[in-house]
Structures are given as C-alpha cells and as structure tokens.
Length: 90
Image 1 (cartoon, rainbow, N blue to C red):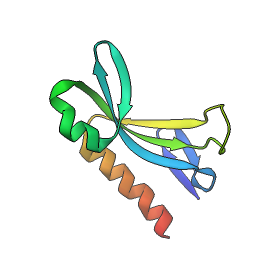
Image 2: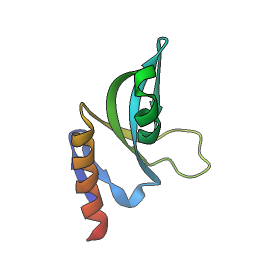
Image 3: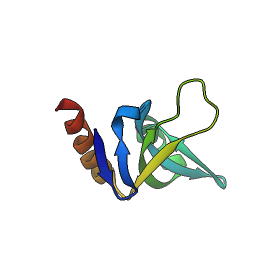
Image 4: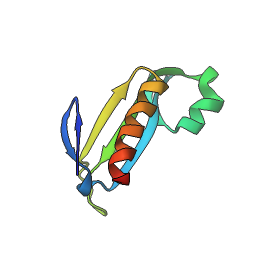
C-alpha cells in the first residue's frame, strides 16, 4: 500500500508508527509536541508548523527511519491524515 507524498512514495505496509505533531519553539529549542499539548499551551510557545510523522523504524532499533511531512496549517495536516486513513480503509 503506497501513499504518494511530496517526499516520494511511502510504503505504508512497513509503517510502525504514524502520528501528527506540532513543531514548537521555546527558549531557542525546537520540539515536536502532541496536538493536545499545543491546544493548552499555545500561548507559551511559538508554533512553527504541523507535521505528520511516518515512522518506519523497526521495533527495538536505534536507527531512526522516518519521513516527516510538514504543513503550515492544522487543516492541511488533517486533510493529509484523511487521505492516509482512506488507504487503510480500503
């Protein structure tokens, strides 16, 4: 099952984790935080973008194999999440 993204075709059959996040900056540090966290803490950080992380890292492996799609708005993120969800429903 392939998802065509702006970073190439992603083989979803090899996916180990798929999650959305908000990329925030605080005191010069940049981190991925949950969407729930950003809802309650948005006034304390600078929101840089939203991301959808496709993690292909095998369980118990240290080497990260991830593809991160970046979005300017939460609506764009949700649109892509819906596209990916449709592939899992078929």
